[in-house]
Amino acid sequence: MKTVAAASMPATPSSQSAVQPTRPYGCTNLKLRQLMRRVAQHYDVELARSGLKTTQYSLLTCLAKLGPQRPADLAAVLKIDASTLTRNLAPIVAAGWAVQSAGPDGRSRTVTLTEAGREKRLQAQRHWKAAQDGLNATLGMARVAALHQLVDESMALLSAEADASVGVGAGA
Image (cartoon, rainbow, N blue to C red):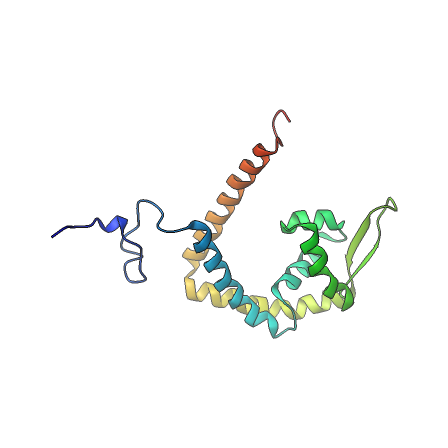
């Protein structure tokens, strides 16, 4: 009978905590997308109770924390492209939760949160908190903290790689 090292077998829910693979099993992109879809579904269900999508809540929160922003700067902070920002911003502006106005130089635009947007964000924040608490309870605080750390470290590494590939940074 041929024996197979446990480390080369895919982790199952029952073996996951007992055996850690020595190398990744499967496509990292697929696994991350599956996790993101599941987490997004969790937040979407809760935030829908406030009448917002998670993308809208993120935009309102970003504007609430940073104040008026140029669309290009807002897109950079959210790590999305300009067309995605335009598409996500349109219903927020249409609902009166934010306004776009001429920027300081007359050529640029500025996005500003309205009072109605602040109120909508506060209403939605209770639902976001319920989603966050639910996820923390399901996964456990230690796992969520480890996930945050892993994501932050991975984003830094991938950002450095992307910057190097376009010549940004030292010597550029």
